Length: 215
Image (cartoon, rainbow, N blue to C red; front, side, top):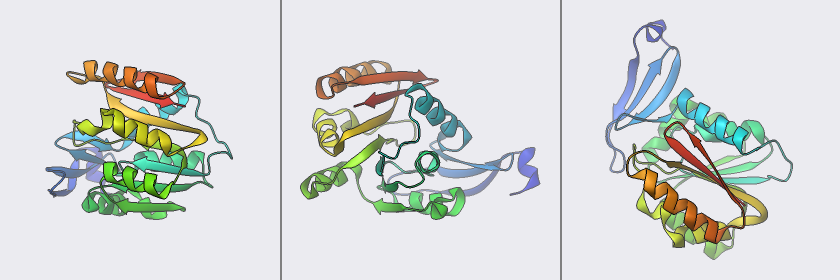
C-alpha cells in the first residue's frame, strides 16, 4: 500500500476482458476497490451494503449453514463476509471472467479464504449443471453484475426456479439487485416473481440497491 493513496486515489491495475470492459483496481486511503465501467464492484462501499443487508435479514452464525454458493465473485467482498460469519462452511464462488477471479486473488485476498473453491463458469449454465448433478447448498448468493447492469436472465422465472431447486430444505437465497432508473420497475417485477416461487420473501432497500431474502 502506498501512503500517497491517502491523498490521491491510485490506479494499480487497469484492463479489459471479453466480459468486463474498463476494469480498474484503485488504491484509496490504503484500501483497494474494484470498478467496472466506473461502477463499484468490490471494496468498502460494497462491504457496507452487504453488512447492512445481512443485519436487516438477521443473518447470524449458524452450524446449519455448511455450504454456500456465490454466483458472481468480482473481488470477493461478500465471500470474505460470509467466511467471517460461517468460518466452517465450504464456499463455491462462480464467475464467468477468469481475470476477475485473478484480481480477487491478487488484490482482495481470496487466496486466503479456507474452504473456498472458485469456478470459472457462466452462472446460468452452472445452475443448469448443478441441477443435473442434484447439488444443493444451504445458502445461495446471487450477486451478478456487469458494471452497473444486471444480466437479464437473473430476473427470469426459469433461472429463479432453478436456483430454488438448488437450495437445501432449510436453506435460503439472498439476491443483490438494483432499484434506480429502469431497475425500479424491474425490482418490483422481480419481487412479484419471487413471491410466486418462494414461501417467504423479504426485501431491503439500501442506497441504490435492493436485496431480497427468500426462504
